Length: 319
Image (cartoon, one colour):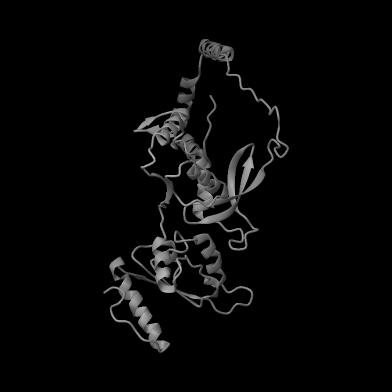
């Protein structure tokens, strides 16, 4: 009976053992020799097993081509579709790679001047949401799954039964799609006593209210990190989750590397209460409590005001 080794080390070890115990090896080889009857028995069992397995019916798999094949679809050839990633706070132009009707990859759109084809980890991972098996496939009412026909019928009947003296409120997230906005306008026109309220998981209404108090207009400002010589951030993870991290990252890196003859880079100082992606990239990072943020901002304002010969503030922002 032949002996096989799994590695060079096992072969060398086996050779040493053979030389050390040569009489024992000969006795073992003699004991392992099979008789002719055993060989025919094993051979017959193998042939019978193969015959039984071959006779089992295999499942039939049919490949049915498209009866009406779209002009832009070619089997095995990928197509790219321009789209937009939106998570309630950030909108990123993207290109979706689709093969045989299945999205398989997301990349940034190079035609966008703000991102220049950049994406973030959140944008790349959003593709997995399309293949999430735990995602609900049907509507549910009071914890029980119902069909779409029943759900739409119950909603329509409920809206019709609302009296004119009562108000109908539609609660949605912020809508950026023109088609969705047009559909909601048509829906609101059918029910004069209805209105729409917007609620986002990441709300930036505080920034709008602060700018309305400061400059008289409720806006969310756009920052230009590529023009800043010093960046001071208080708890704003602008490279990870705050506002538009994909846009800000593209601007931030332009002034953080010595390329194309650039001789200086911006200095980044970050204050935060926990580790973030922005804090890990800062030159100087300081840990503070959220309750201390106002005091730090006031100290910075007084220092800048002193250098610019402006009046300082005492205790106006936090304590």
